[in-house]
Image (cartoon, rainbow, N blue to C red; front, side, top):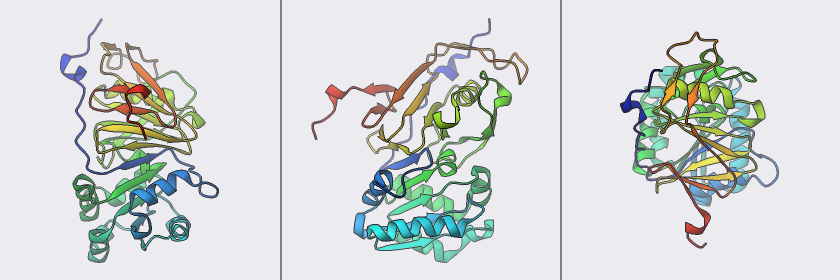
Length: 287
């Protein structure tokens, strides 16, 4: 039985953040309480917020961008700019880079994560966003496809309803905002546990994060992940996994994964990304 090499068992230490990154599982409430969107608005500065909306994952970027523009305008944002990027060359537009200099929040919409990466990856615009996230100068949020791109390794597509196997998941390179995680979205709503497990079998040095619809995993500056919304966030931790047959079987054959750790978190639950442990309710600070 082939064991995993010891190097791959070492958990990756997340790079420190100085502000919040909100990773939303898609289909967040846009009509009623708008809890997740209100939280992004507040974290981005409230009535002083200067928000950049990036809708280029969508094939109808104007329509989806205008919808979020209306939502944040109704909340009272100070300024809102739609970065309607349809060609990679637009990622060098100095006007948008100047707006980002003053922005306090960036929101990436849903659509096709491959399209989003094709237009943004390695552009000056994306490098500026990544730098401002690390410096703590903006709150970044991404929903659906905008969530999928957060890791270095990205789930680009795949199936559901099968046992874990390599053919169930298509991997690509993401934007690397949270390079140590692999994100999947619309998670339980589209029965995607098997494809996240398949992705983790291929990349056992990463942490799997599966996020339900109308649910948000908030990656905080203190190294914790906090859950908000109506569904769950699923953590797949392969840190103690000592065997997988991933390298020995055909792409469509089922996968073995020994000794995975899985956590299912709901609203208010917190997870320590550095220690890879649950923050128990009794150890949380009193509000």
